[in-house]
Image 1 (spheres, rainbow, N blue to C red):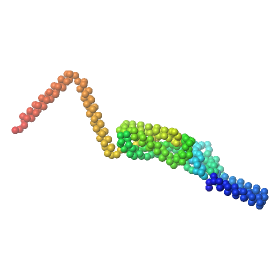
Image 2: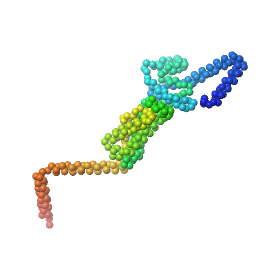
Image 3: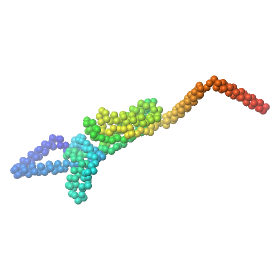
Image 4: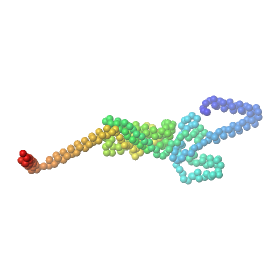
Length: 311
């Protein structure tokens, strides 16, 4: 039943008017008084039946909606625990239900709801985790890579911008992981497209990528509107491992080996040039003499072999 429909109020007014005329005709003024008492009693019963509440503990936030038009009303943030007020310890097993209800109403974790409100869902205050895997991302040099990601985050509804409260009240209870995960994957895709495959495997490259990713995602969830997440820190985001296709991995290994060999040869040549540049003219004469003797020794050895060869 939607109380906003005019036909409902029209029927109520018509019924009350008919009942008032009938009571006056039957019992005169006494009938009017009895009718008013019955109406008040009925209204009080409705008020008691609609006066509800909900327990929201210190580690959660209740999301309250209007039960009739499905609109968001407010957040009910569970208060921090207070050791000086232990209401549950006042409950006695022989108390009637009414007494227990009165104690529950005095509980600071008991959220009083208006007659048209209800707690539709709850948002945890504790740290949450989202993780996923992005496949076939293209680096700046066109190499496809697959990268795993993981992020720890905490929701704080007091940070939500006022103009999007109703949107986040529907998104955060069930889809907070999708909200933060979408921002992570969007920013990570853009960062990978700006890097070459060699830069992703360099010393400290993964830590630098995590820090830059953290900064980008934090800006996305706070500007121009705040989505209700606490500030992300680099330690909250973990990336890796980064994998590439098997054939690409083999090609990278061969290229790395060739690079090491080239660097080794270049280093040896440099050291040889440095050693030669330090030689004096006397050293060069000695080297020339050694080379002459080596050639003569080679010729004598060859002649000896020719002489000893059997005919």
